Image (cartoon, rainbow, N blue to C red; front, side, top):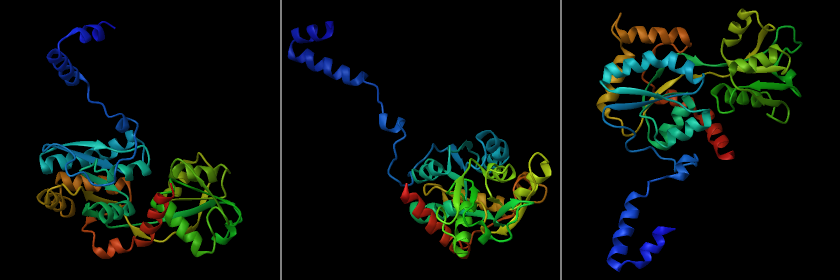
Length: 309
C-alpha cells in the first residue's frame, strides 16, 4: 500500500513519469490465446522465420508415432530447402483443421478432404499427393451372419474420428444403401481405426469401418477375434501435401521436383520408399483438378459437419 500514498504526494510531472514506467513494465499477456479460443479462420501471411518451417502432420497416429514415421521426410525437406523443419500436429482432427485455417503450419501432410478445404477456403497451394486411392473397409466378425450392408440396420457401426475420410466415406456408403446414420444404424465414435476394429473383434460393435486392408493386420496379430470384409466404400485420392499461401513458389517447385522425380538411390527415393511401406499411398505426383473434383461429396459433408459443432 506504500506506492499509492507516495504517488498521491508527488507533483504531477512525477505522476506522469510513474505511469509511463508502470505501463512499460506491464507484461504482454494474451489470455484469450492461452485459453485456446477460436481465432478468425484465415491463413497467416507469415507463419515462421525465414530459416524455420513448421511442418503440420495429420494426427492419424500418436504424436510419438507421427514423429518416428515422418522425421525422415522432415529431414528431406530440411536438406532440400536448407531450412530447419519443426514438426507440429494437433490433439485431434478438428483442432488440426482449425490450426490449418489459422495458418500455423508452413507445410502440411494432410487428409485429401482437409487439403481440398484448405485450398478452397484459405488459399493454400497444392504441392503433390500420393497416387494410390484411399478406401475404407466395412468389416464384421468372421462368424457374423451379416451378408450385406442392409443387414446392419439397427446395429452399431464403430468408426474413427467423425471427420476422418473413411468415416465420411462410410456415411456416404450407408446412405447409398438407404441407411441414415444414427437413425437406422448407430454410429459409435472410437479413438482410432484400430480401436474401431477391436470393438468388433471383442463384440462391442456389429461392424466397423477402417482404412482399407487394416483389418488383415489385426487378424494377423492373433490377439483378437477374426474379422472379414463386408463391403468397401467408394475411392478417393490419398494423402496430400499443401503449402501455406505465404510459402514461396520457388520452394514449392523444389519440393515437387524432389518428391515427384527422385533420383534412383537418392535420399529422397529412400524416404519415399520407406513411406510406401508404412502406408499404402504409392508414388507421389501432381494433384490434378480432376483429382480434387473427386473429393466434392466428401468436402460437402466435411463442411456441414464443421458447421454443426
